[in-house]
Image 1 (spheres, rainbow, N blue to C red):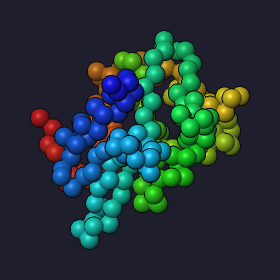
Image 2 (cartoon, rainbow, N blue to C red):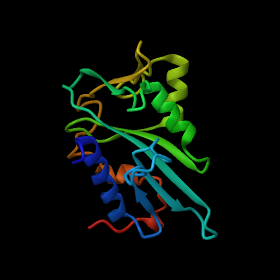
Image 3 (cartoon, helix red, strand yellow):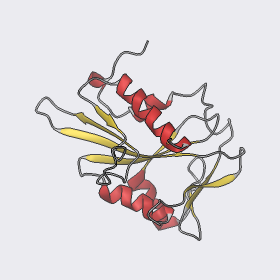
Image 4 (cartoon, helix red, strand yellow):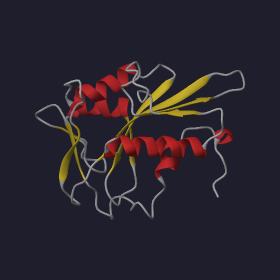
Length: 181
């Protein structure tokens, strides 16, 4: 039986599959047991041009429960014994050159937060904390990444904001998106 995190990831893959055309490959890369692409939780691969040049978005999704305004670790390593910063670096380094690494953080009753992973990694390595970002991502002493759950004044609620699937497919060309009903 899949845990809550894996269930969330599989639900997002299903939603992305339903929201995109058959030319878009939406998958949970390591679900088959292959560890080749285990650095990402969700992958969306799509053609960019008629000559079949491709692009993709590789997401690490984190679903965390915490009270509003409270800080929690959102990336605290993987089952491989990595720290959160090492896990983020692996996502960035393993994403193919034609892809974009992204981190999605989902707090209860809040719209999904999506970060460009390469930018997040570089800025956390440089400054250690990003107080100007909603949730103020911060590198902890244990080399993990923590954030606080934003208030409704800082971030949209899950019902008022965009659905997760719209945020996950935001960079997919509109020609590959199905019409929303």
